[in-house]
Image (tube, rainbow, N blue to C red; front, top):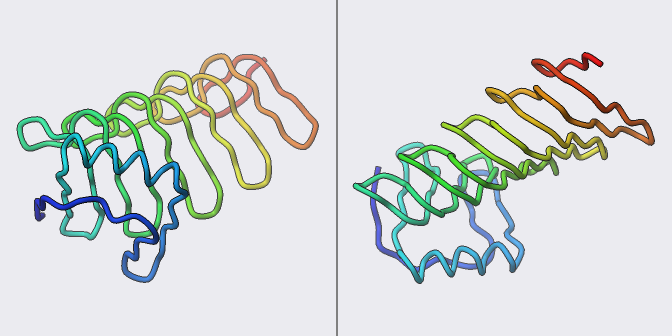
Amino acid sequence: MVLEKKPFQQGNITLGNSIAEFVKAKASISSIISAINPLRLVHNGGDIYEGNFVSGRASGFGSQIFLDGRYYTGQFLSNKLDGQGQFNWLDGRQYIGEYVKNRKQGYGEYRWQDGRVWKGEWTDGRMSGVGRFEMKGHLLQGEWKDGNYLT
């Protein structure tokens, strides 16, 4: 892993064979991060973290770009997704919500590229607790456990 002090580069970021295109809003967020704490961590595998560090670990607000093109912007704690954040996949899926130690935990909204939406509670990375699942004009609302609808 390499720790570099560099300004954020706006525009397309090429990572191996994948390209993550950032909209101007996300690029400006990263620019703000760089202005506060302009450190970038390039992992051995090629993933890039840019943001705040505490005791040499990604902690506080930051962005992570994964080699396969996925990206996350939000809170980190000791190199893990932890707190509020937004995770985006290249196929259009998106999660906005809470994380604890890299797992979806607490309230969050997950959107699939085909229009399905889950708004509700997560436990250990799975839809669990009270929530609502919307799919092509249908609505399931109630209690869920381990991704399964109970009532």
